[in-house]
Length: 141
Image (cartoon, rainbow, N blue to C red; front, side):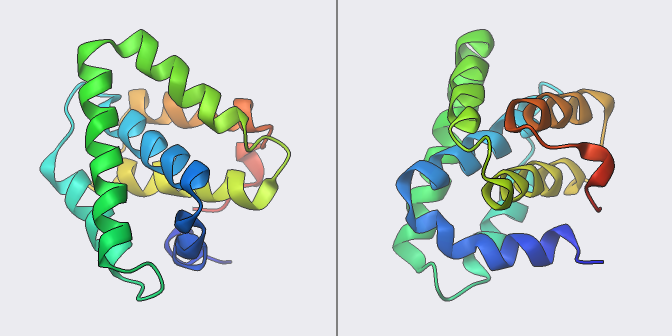
């Protein structure tokens, strides 16, 4: 079975698409903020992932991290409005199983990065999977 990390690494090049990159970083921020603590280790895990593939490039990784940071700030400032925007972005990938799975994988990677995948993080993943039209029961770890 393919691990989430391997699937994400295969999808890194998709981050060159602005719409996918924004949705992926927003998804990561939503899951990171689910427990109302966006931890440095979560951002660090995302940064490591983004920089792990030469296909993305340093400038693209920096831009993606800036988008992630902006969504964390937006979630802190107005959770309801920012979450609505994240879900709208994810909805744009409903019906595209490959991209949808990659978005869920980013969320899962953030959720487990602090070795404590809490119920609030899982709840965000469940809601994202529903918006994307994906069945979590079929998803691998």
